[in-house]
Length: 258
Image 1: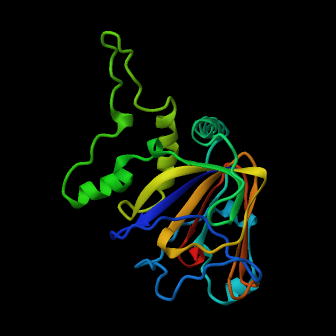
Image 2: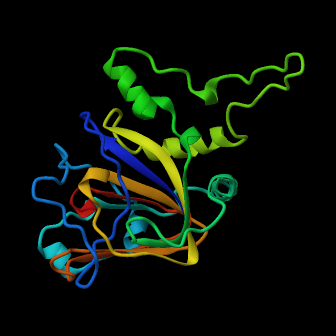
Image 3: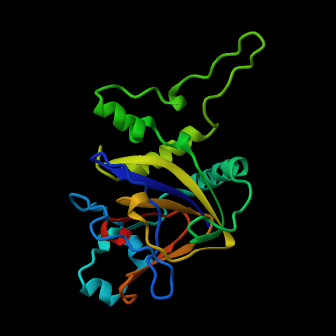
């Protein structure tokens, strides 16, 4: 499975990094957040799924009867076209070859195995990231984005240079549709990162540490399908199973994040 994953900080200021999670049942190593430490939004983040998404999500009866919000899971099948999918895969593979050429068998939290991962700052406009938020708070304009600057022309023996990758602008146009689903100014985004899970790799059940997670995490699923299962820590019968087909966009928000 190949995926581009987005993470967001919620305004006001306290920055919190988001990561994908799956809550597990008995027998798994889980770090339970201390009471009061879990971030709480002032109001729920609600995204409306297209009707075609319903066939890919299965809620347990306990999840529904206990009042959990179905809107905490968002799925948008076929969010990108075939040509956009192929462009994303090609660009992701180029970034991975340069920044994460080998698969890692383990992670410091011992929850993911046989994977490659890297962050791509060029795919995040300054206006949507920390630089734009800080500049707006100080009443200043953010520095120009490298993607908006012209290449330096060759002079003398210098051959000039290119400020961004060949297709980074096209990737931004695709990701702009993702960020555009949320109200303007609601979230401050971190640079998207690429996660390549080997066919023998796995992400084990875990609950995010509130110190390193926030209100929203999502991604674009590429190449192959994946299943994401969410289970309540204390009662595994409270669960949601989500099939993520290739080209689909998904988000987890609010209570199901923890």
